[in-house]
Amino acid sequence: MKMTKIINAAYIMIGDEILSGRTKDENLNFLAINLTNLGINLKEVCVIPDNEQKIIESIKELKNQYHYIFTTGGIGPTHDDITIDAIAKALNDKIILNQKAHQILIDYYGSDNVNEARLKMAKLPSKAKLLNNPVTSAPGFMVENIIVMAGVPKIMRAMFNSSLEFLDFGDKILSKEISLNVTESVIAKDLTKLQNNFPNVAIGSYPFIGGTAIVFRSFDENQIRQCYDIISNKNYE
Amino acid sequence: MKMTKIINAAYIMIGDEILSGRTKDENLNFLAINLTNLGINLKEVCVIPDNEQKIIESIKELKNQYHYIFTTGGIGPTHDDITIDAIAKALNDKIILNQKAHQILIDYYGSDNVNEARLKMAKLPSKAKLLNNPVTSAPGFMVENIIVMAGVPKIMRAMFNSSLEFLDFGDKILSKEISLNVTESVIAKDLTKLQNNFPNVAIGSYPFIGGTAIVFRSFDENQIRQCYDIISNKNYE
View 1: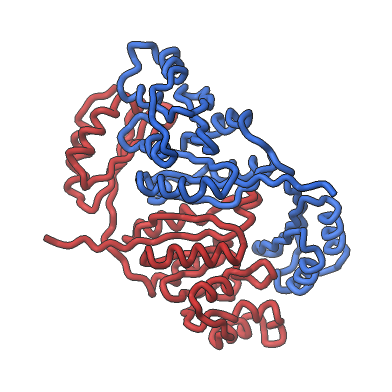
View 2: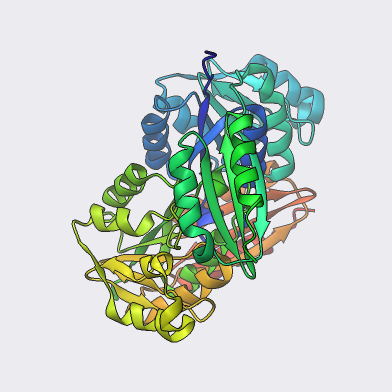
């Protein structure tokens, strides 16, 4: 029997602006969809403020629980960008001027324009591996099992794609969905029985106005198909 | 000198469908904006799966750290709706048939149609206070300092509004924003100095493609105004 290869991840979204409502998050759903498609299971997300102590605590708490930790936010040139230093502290790593990142900034801005603020973006944990930023040049990075990305969605997406070369992928959780024109309570009993009969399929029931979507998720395509057929052969209308 | 009244909250979003990417969250930004406007500071958000142990742990970890904990998801009639039982366990409360909730379901569905699945939605922690659900009737509830709401955005919003009568509001954090047509690194030095001079104003710098938005947040309107004037009187272009 083939062993299922399971790779789990958490995501720490760092930013006062998300918690105040000033900015609407656009990264979680992108990350969730892409990780799922790659065979990395997103198991937990935290949204925390730009607070050094909170970042350190979150990294320390999560880094040994999951294969990968993704972060967004707080890696720019201004005083409120404190993620890089906080992560270095959480890992007991030191901050150094990353020569490769420095050169990237010089190539993009010109050496006369790499002022103190911009230089900050090249001061990274000593063990950082760079993630490409084709939008504004200053790179993201991966250090240990932590993938550190910008919060601006367009830049985040590029950095995420750049991180893939460093990641290990697991078996994909497959899913199949069926929509029914009935409320959840009509099908609840059947779903409970089905869930008991198929413990290796996660059966989710999601009401919408006017009906219910049933989602079957499993590593086993055959079992998903069996569940799907059982439900779709019933006539609930 | 007037004391500032501070009320803090956390939000636990419960749902496999958010973590798999199947569903895009529509609740966080609504909650963040409305809490901020009411004088309740959202300090932390967790997104966790429909997993009883994880729900219990999250509630236990957060409930004594914040004035209020808001939750969404997992309060429907199906097998995967486990939030209510998990919260009761976390609080060492017992689940009882809430007579008022039961009557609401009878009035809405008719007594013959309150089947076992629907009845589950009236089985609540013994200390629950009900939150009105004008969309599909089955109520949300508040128990101790925890506000338990549905995940469907339209229903969540109604339950949130219904919860306001039970909540205590603090002083509002005020904010003012200015957009500049320059990149962050041009203004970083000035912002650092300004932040040092105004420790009671949280100054956030948010790049967008083509410029930077500066956000000043504080309980003190006068200090926000001073910061705003200092930045807007500079000519960065």
